[in-house]
Length: 216
Image (cartoon, rainbow, N blue to C red; front, side):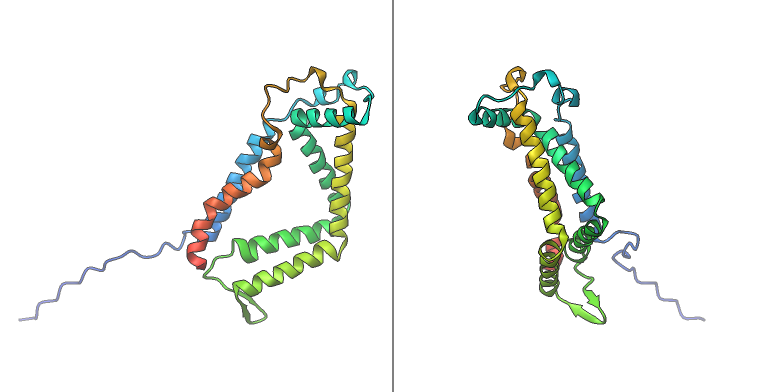
């Protein structure tokens, strides 16, 4: 008579899902999604471009204080359009200087993929040497200082922003804001100008809990 075969013991737990993306990828996607939503909401507040370029509303300011007042009122009304003008000026400046554009993109991607959204369980290894988070941060800070202050990137960005700022100030000073309904608008600080800080803070708030749990 053959011996009874022992029953197989049940195995608790589930096998890890190999198709599940790492936490950093999920955090990066959440960041991009929130950034895209904030950008869409901010761009929806822009004014019609024909209203911005209406030549019948242009006139010479009577004094410097009048020009300053016009700039403040026009910025409150056209703030999204003005910031888009500055952004387009910066973009064209970088496009016509491809070397600076490549350096800036390299710096941006280095911060994103080597530090901010790098999975904590995947240490940075270069030429067989493992770098800690503190060492990686120090290298990125040094690289940022080199790119911004020791190459043409910093001067190009500053000159492009100053050019766009000059165009905005010139338009705001010569456009009479008498026909603009400023009382119904939100304060200037709540428009597209707060997009960068608001979008970044919201995205980071959504991604920090998942990243910090693994890095601490």
